[in-house]
Image (tube, helix red, strand yellow):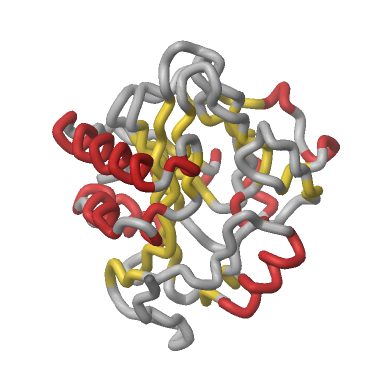
Length: 254
């Protein structure tokens, strides 16, 4: 469980690294499932935007009680899992993730998500760990992004340079099995991996159910932003509680 100090840090900084680590047996299971995913879908060798669309085995990790407990402390008792991604930066050729806010991509209104980031490998400065701008979530709004279709980037929406100061960046160095949790408005990104060590990270995306997953908005975003992977067909999985909005669709989509 998150301590009061952890919760205060999340509110102040937009992220927290709790005193928690998944057992190596779980990490080995994730690695094995990821290897199977890549064997079937080699196009996702360094980034898969939605692992659940290809293998619902990954739901097992989204339902780990300790993780779900921590998310409940942040979002409250009613929330759903709406996506899981895999940012796997292979040794020597892992792509850069540009500075961005997650909410720029997502069809959730009001904008709200707590992301759990799992270090499937040790995440270091050398292999392209997550970098964040501490406290950048406090404005509770999306900053200006522009489209960048460079092939060396994992995402194509990049925060405009005047919206942040990279001198304020903090490196989120994690040991294998550690997790971080961050807010949907937090400015973050990561450098390319040119090291000999892979940097695999899995994300779990949870939204409070008083927000609505707007599939019509998702279709417009895909077209307007030219997203490589749209969100309109994501399956929502109720994790705890009930749908407070009464408008979320939990129909399974394959």
